[in-house]
Length: 414
Image (cartoon, rainbow, N blue to C red; front, side):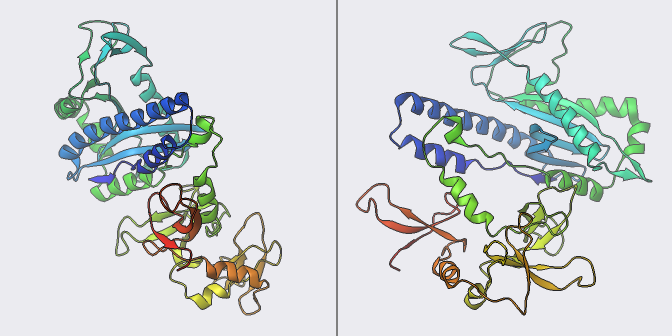
């Protein structure tokens, strides 16, 4: 069963492509072009491996497949290319490498790739993946995500796998103290998996049967893990030391104004989607600290496209800091269940108002909210931009704040 697909990197590609069109030095452009090449290369390698894994496991009821899982835990990060999880709590942690000219492994386990037919030493992907496994195990343990049977946590058995492109040359030592049997071309993994399962069933059949979980438990466990994915965001201006205003940060700031605080812990919330049930696909606000905190809010709780113009115009300012307020629901105490106005900057500001006594204290704020149009394509707030080239260079227009994911525009004079 396929639980999560690979994140799309089109936004990064669009941003880097835009940087290449700017007035930068040739040295900076060469660095950006190399970054783009790495994005394309890594994407190609992961897609190739995902194709073979999907072919064999996408429709399986006994195995759950997760592509592109990034976990953050106590300051450490694990970027896992693929996870294959079985009902007997076998977890294949799969690292993908894409070297078009090939990879060689020495008797001592040193890795090299070829450039102009010359070997270039690289860090061991097996050692890299081993670090991923250790962090994954700590993450599951400390967040109590292990499935349970009769109240006992079922700890998984991990397999460290490295896949390379089927077109690449792979040179392994015939003999040596280093076991590199887990390094293979991606189209060979299915055979390796079958042999591994046959061997495992023979040696550990009783232990495996004791750890088996139901299909529903497998799906629930895999979905809980995929839910913890933290997408990678890269500040390219800082990475390349560019003196360019980071538009993406400004857009994030605009969106954060309408992002509610978690009603349970007061932390930041992010948009998530329901994975199963009658509301499958429906988006909601979920606490960013999940699974430690499981606070949720329906999207309609904050200012959204479903609210009428009258509702938007009646949004009050916070009496403490003058920022816009959002409707919240009391979670405890004698007023549990009551709706009230809470500051959108919570927990930094804890200003509140009763719904019935709230008044708009600033006409300027109302005008600003009501005058800003919503995107005609996706209904997100729009921001003022100016044309960078062409006949309309310098002319201002409304552009979607979700750019480059959405490219909706509205003329200023509309």
